[in-house]
Image (cartoon, rainbow, N blue to C red; front, side):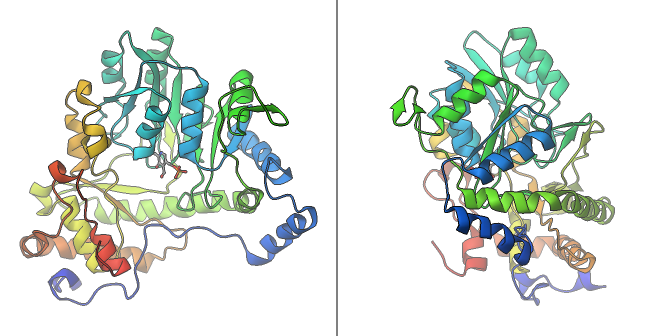
Length: 422
Ligand SMILES: Cc1ncc(COP(=O)(O)O)c(C=O)c1O
């Protein structure tokens, strides 16, 4: 059986000849996109809320079932603008187990991040801990809908309503996800999506704020356009957060393919689940019954005691096989150099730390063949069989320990896939 063969990190032949990346960004059929481009060549309108941006905003509002959609250049700027537009002061409750942008946006909006621990089952904000963390200075709750899934929305909503707080979501990873039949985007008082190229649905770079609140919508539209009301007349704080027409055009071309991509992702996740469910030392976060995910991520939790390797060690060993996986989110935001000093009040986050030390996201690609998935599974099993030797080989080659992360976090990806060292 091939699992007995030596892993590439120990000198065996890599299972892939070329790097097998986590995702393969979608592109529309060339002919169709060329047809749409003709319109841009005709109008020469390339930005400033042209016809393509307006059309995509309309399509997305309809698709999500929300009144208003304002497109942005990316989700980070959209989050910054949203938090600032609400005129919040004090603290915002959010998880540390997220991409740094969530917490960075809070700082840009002059809010203090109050990191609250996650529920170990869902890996998202724990509503019980959120309730306990609400205090005098709490201004909002910002949940993060991770890995194409959703927070425990009903319980978070109950906490938010009890305290009269806005409930916001960073839904950067959750476009197309449903919670009790409602789309992500139609759950919070306002939500933000990312349409970065690596997302299931994308516009190259891009993002959106969606909300049912017409006043908030009008304000974020002004703020993304320098705070202008009329031509060159600033009536509000603003920046340039506009999405270019070319990006919107890409989005309009890709939206139609979304159901197929979700269905393909569902098949990939089902096959992973079938093959990895019984591997000792691996656990697979269970999708909640009320959630129908977008299936664009497949996180596994690697228990070093049962598997013989940590998530970082397995990530390194798989990179030698030319399989790109990612430890999202190691390190958690509160452990990074910049945030360490800011988050002292948040206390311990044991579940966040535990998840960060275990999580590994496997490739989910819409062009993925069963045979490729089987090779990835084979690589994982192979690493487990040879765990002690793999661990010994990985020693000293992993990102610096947490304490030193502020200084440098070497990423073996650079060396093994990009072919250079920092
Ligand atoms: C949870 C989360 N929030 C925010 C962002 C930032 O999105 P963008 O790259 O569009 O600014 C990302 C990007 O991956 C994300 O995963």
